[in-house]
Amino acid sequence: MMVTGIALICISAGPTARAQEASAWQGDLHAAARLIAGAARKSGDAKWLRAGIEIRLEAGWETYWRYPGDSGVPPTIDFAGSDNVKSVTMLWPAPQRFADAAGGQSIGYRGDVVLPLRIVEKDAAKPALLHVKLGYAVCGKLCVPAQADLKLMLTGNAGAGDPALSAAEARVPRLVALGAEDGRGDGLSVRSIHRQMDASGHGRVIVEVAAPANAPVNLFVEGPTPDWALPLPELRDPEAGGTSAMRRFTFDLDGLPPGAHAKGALLTLTAVSPGDAIEVKTRLD
Image 1 (tube, one colour):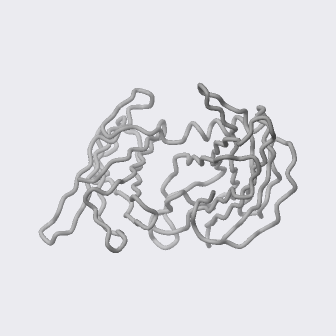
Image 2: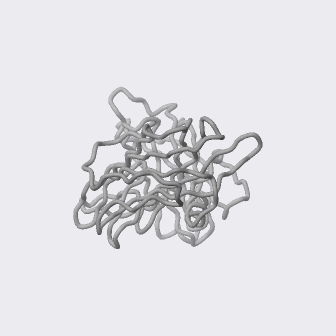
Image 3: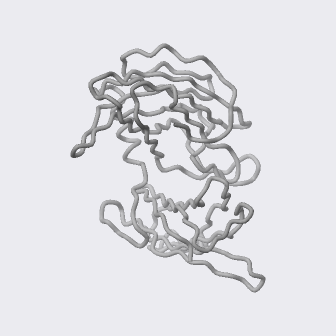
């Protein structure tokens, strides 16, 4: 079980797993990581354990989302060394956009971020050991690779990490349909998406996002596979965008891998406002 990316240099070795609420921090002054555990959850016949990868960043430093934008690298997460673990689902809290040192725009996190995990055991009557090999990049005035080898025995009991874990889960974008307003958030919705072709045959995509007036909104777009490197959408009319309930974002159809076609491609759109975050999967016309 691995989230793919690049190999990075190890900072320190992993501790021995113990039945505790969190693993020890591993890292340096710029960044450190640990595992935290939360209370188990159940819905119908489904039950899962909860944990999170907590990354602590020095002020002025950042790390990256699953799609890093113009620069940076996404984290690599390997769960293969876990014991009595059937599956792990990784959740990504809503990221932010920030300028990078190369003059581009990157997507990621600053401060303290928790990446929630949902773990299904093979045998609920036995303890589960979560083993995570984490690789991530941290950037400030320069970028450095980091790694952590983390282990934590999961009990399913509530602990000190529950509030941070619950807060991170609340910031995971909700999956909604194109054009849908489900009434659970602050009115955020992706209303439409379509292509425009210019005289030379070059394509541009226009996305309309509804949001509360005066609320800042960010939009991120991912292609159907990680080798798509689509540009970050830009607000078409920044001056009017803050006061209008409808925002129009555009991005050029650049960064497609060789042989890929835009028509019919499954895109993932993530819209983020201060009070809400949604994820929309839709095919391009």
